[in-house]
Length: 231
Figure 1 (spheres, rainbow, N blue to C red):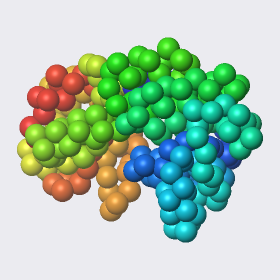
Figure 2 (cartoon, helix red, strand yellow):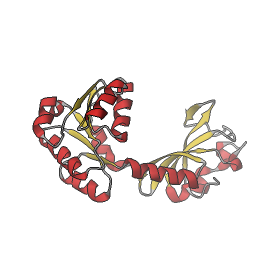
Figure 3 (cartoon, rainbow, N blue to C red):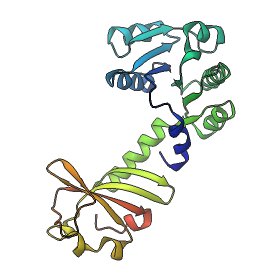
């Protein structure tokens, strides 16, 4: 996720308690299950009746229907057009994905998130009206590669192609030193946002706070400067 996504997420209604998920593959099931566990009302659909039955049996959604999302009439009858946010989780069937996204947008849904399987797929989804496009496999692959090559970086939030916020294990070189002593801004051009203590983060820690090996710290700055840290 980056700054380009801010406009979409800021437009989401904060009081929205209902979501529709179209497609019950791995991605669709994951989204549905998580929303359901968080207490939101979820209507999931899939063209495969078996997947619908499994979702209901496993109770990963409150409601599930078998329908063909390429048919506008079926979507309208199911009430999909009445939802504020719809997730089109059909990533591997490009034609169905694009037609479904078009149908949902033409049906008046204000916020449509669609899963893409390639850059061309992403462009087509944006052309037919998708408000936000995600690449679950691509993003997971990038995250894995970063973890394998930089195991001390626990998590990363990309602000833009050149700047990030990262959560990382405190380097051995910083152990026992105060925040003032490591001179993070002067030496690396980075700003320290938080440090962990007993499983909780202290935001804007005091300059005289000592860092401990095995704890975590959160920094913000340019990626090339982050890569210069002794990690």
